[in-house]
Length: 436
Image (tube, rainbow, N blue to C red; front, side, top):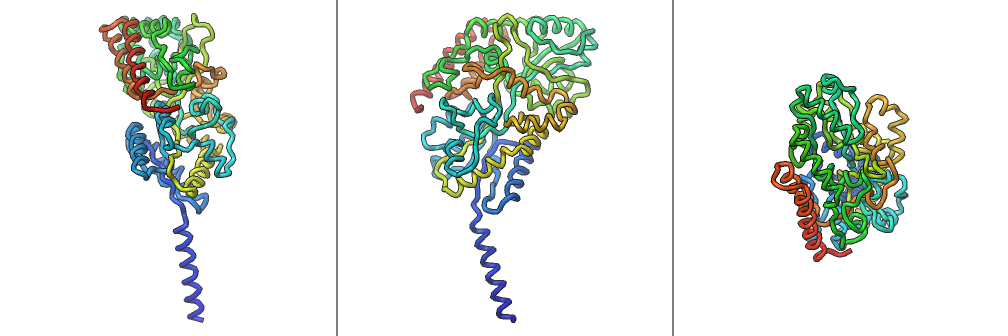
């Protein structure tokens, strides 16, 4: 019996070893830190526990630009990750990298995985699809700018704790808040994203030609239109009146709000969890103000955040694993939990409906504002997103010019003219090296 037992054990060990070796590793490079990084690890572990053929390995690679740069460099070196998280302004760069990506819709079809782009929120899916409606990358962490107000500060100023719906109403409220002794009346995070990109979409105005770059590389910026110039001038006037405090190009403004320093804030919907954790006052989450003199406003806002791209030069087995993982990632229960845990919008209609039916939006008022704003109206050519090459630098150019206006160094017209010219120069440089 002993030799037979030994042989049986040996056979079992060999089989187990062979099974372990057969497991295909799928590298997932990402840019999420802190609690978000922990949640990414939880998602990967959940998938790994759900099956035994594949192992998704999440790897933090730094900031958004660092992660994208690292993935492109790895591709050129012949060893890219299977999946990489890329922020939305990197979409055109990823698309133009010949052979460096495998479109998600193609991946799913080849892997035999069920896939229907119509299950995703239209304003989210539209950002990552080509002109034929094929999805290029998988939406992951999507957000949109929203409008926060300190309700206690409003009451102190003798105001009803209700957010102004229009910029005209905003001016009236701002004056009363200032008169009540509020040192910082209003501030904003991500100024180019909020006050150029989303301002344009919210008012159904083009940021650029060719459907904001989605229609091709020969796009040209249109951010020096009378409406854009008037909006930037309005912010400059607010600054002169003491109603607007410029806080920086990223999310520095959020701390000014949740500390109680500023009474009103426009910034990412993804800031809600942090604001809820830190604010010692009653606040509300609301849709962005709009200019009621612009016909058709408000339209819909557009997303920020990032999506997941599948890289080229990977094996068929890795692609099958990636497809199965992305299918898992779109599960309704997982997306609803991701939405509730992080403040990012659910990427599917089903996940939004699940959160609503479970009473989440009754328990957490304002948590559905981002989705409602993205879906306010069906996206148009002006409001389904943008796709510009070199747009990391392009945003910096826009913000630099806006800062010059807020500092009184340039007129709004001159600054937006210069932002348009400089932005177009970046587009032409990208066009010279990229392909459709």
